[in-house]
Amino acid sequence: GKKARLSTRAMRSYMNNSGKLLFPNNPSRVWFSEQYAPQVWGNGDSGTGIQGDFLDIAVDDGETVTGLAVSDGALLVGKQSRIYRVDYTGNAADTWIVRQVHGQLGVLSNWSMQVIPDGLFFLSNRGPAICYGTYSDVLPQTRLIQNLFDNTSAESFDLSSMIYTVACNDTTRNQILMTISSPGVTIRDRVLSYDYEQKMFGLYDGYQANYVAIIGDANGFPVFWYGNLSGEVFKTINTSASAKYVDGGITPILSSYSTPNLDFGDPASWAQTDFLYINGKVQSSGNLYVDLFSNNSTTSFRTISIDQTLAQFSIGIPVRVGAVMQNLKLRFRSVDFTGVSGFELHWLRLESNESSGTRMG
Image 1 (tube, rainbow, N blue to C red):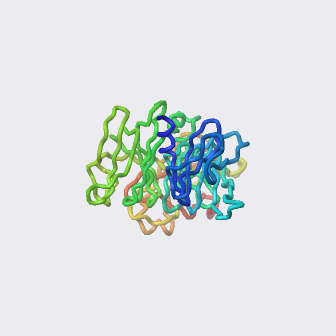
Image 2: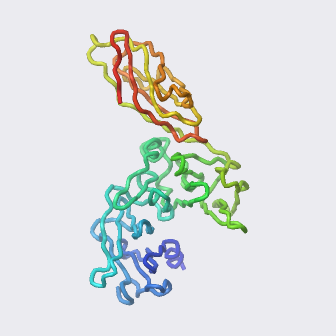
Image 3: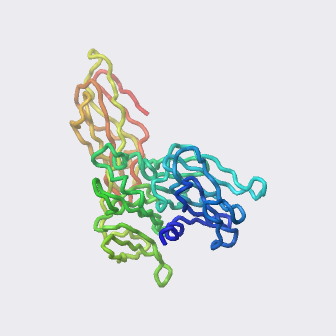
């Protein structure tokens, strides 16, 4: 029946018990099976039955349990805007310790929760996030594409349709693959990847996916499968351990970082900015793009391309500006996905025709 299917999807094994989310009358309740007997459960909402058959998680917070996962030796219970950590004590008088995890993040979809080396990956109410120990936060890389997870943005994915988002973890390629909904689309229709080795996001073209899974082939090698709402199931062709599912094609997601407006003071202090020096970590490949905005404009007056493979990048590359301005804002971005771990800046320096320069950390 419907309840049995729901409990199967939401089950997580912890301390040789199975936990499930099942009864709508108690939206903050997590049920536990008999220890070592995942088929034996308590007697419904009556609260009678077997040893330790349920645990209520912050019943007065007004939220519903939305996800269960086991990570870092603890059971993590997600709600709409918060996460709770449940630790097993082994003490019959006080079997469980329940603590709220720091960080106002909730779990949007139970099926998005995946354990990776950095902690527990999950789709939160503010985008892809990580939970480690007693702390949770959106991934640093999520902040670079925050507009895609902001319902006030026209570019945002349809988060209201992503409560059923499914993710899988390809540990061979160090990638999370997750179904997402394009703007204005009410089903999951695309696949978002997070490469937790390269620390970068990408969108896979050609995959109209509502469900994703990693399934081992005859030799135990993990293969990416996906399905859609038309009842079609597909197996990816490329099974090379080093490949990133290139048979489907990938569209890199623009990663960027913008400085605040750098104010040059009153008009008497406005001088021509001659050079901008940029120093950062040399990369194995790829370019760094710098958009320059002046006088509070939202349109850049110049875009600079810097080869990040040059040894001089670690010393400081000079870029000609040649403009008088009230203030300056810089946006740094990288559109190269393969082989590049984004970009790393160390310091900036502006030089004008009336000063020897100002260094900005």
